[in-house]
Length: 496
Image 1 (tube, rainbow, N blue to C red):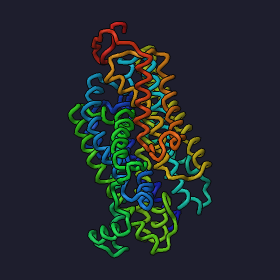
Image 2: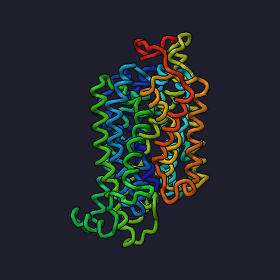
Image 3: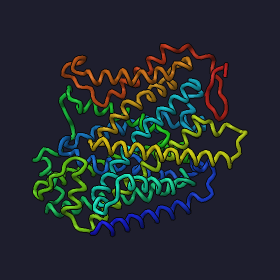
Image 4: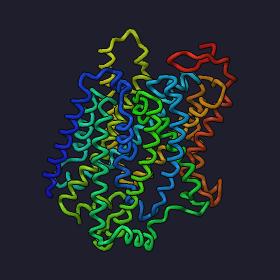
């Protein structure tokens, strides 16, 4: 299939997204943009959040990494499951009890304004870097496989895609995303199933035979048993649980959709269902990765890593499958990019600008400010995507997890301190602690051999990061005054 036809069909897919956005987000209020008026159907949120959680990076990076890591990535997903249970039964009840629009208000009511702003700032930093890394990978694949042949510059491709995302999230926000995520997740998973079935057919294998071949090739190993290795099962389970808690439960993008559900019980069902769906979907991605690694050598495909999946599809599979792949790839891209853009706009407006609390500003003026912030974040996204393009193309799944370990660690420490410590930190020292913790972890990461010998610290450095933040907050805090409850805002001390 020619690149021009594929581009035309992808644009038609965008037109469908715009129609859905128009139907769901027309005349949305600020409350509708931020939390969907708290009327989102929980089952739709659960299914749509699969696409938000996985993104285009999972779509191409997880299958591409099977040749190097076999199925050991699934250890992290098993850890995620336990992390999601903590989100459902520890964090969500706190958010619903306090009636928050931004989850970082929990830090304000328990630790003070310094913690509130610090938590929001670290979320903004982490989500901006993570979302643009995801966005870059998919844009790079679209560019290499379609648009280079048409002479379209990379910068124009990135600008157009971001412009389209802004266009359909500009009005509706979360109210729109609940429905567009549903459509996009269905397309992504449909594409995954189709390509998997086609690969089985091309390999002329039954499911049972394919499992046997994967085992013989050493591609289906799930558990790493060397305790000193970075991917040892114990490390991955612990890291996976805390990554889920931090990247979902303490992340405004993920929780923004959960708290848009009316009832706590329904939101909890959403999270538990999401955890179960994630295990099945990621296992299917890994299985597809194994099939790709069996097929590629026999077909003479030399691409590796993130480039393997697109290369096999474009070089060896029929035009109809190429079309399915690109619709699925674009569908994998947008739930993470549009959700991040909406959540960053919400957090910046609510947590840093205090827009909801400013009674002197009318709703129309607040909407104009919110829309300007939305466009400004889109511009930041574009700049960072171009920056990633200039730096080259490492395995983006590793980049994203590494960024998360350093930037979500302070959030993990802040929330843990807010929930479990009955102490109040000195306001001005909170950002100092939150900055020092990842810097200490960076030193540890860079000097592992000298500090630990053959023991390797991997993604569990997130836990160390959170622990250092917690310890630092303890050292600069005092016992909290007698707490009282303020309706709509949670607990605060007797001094306000």
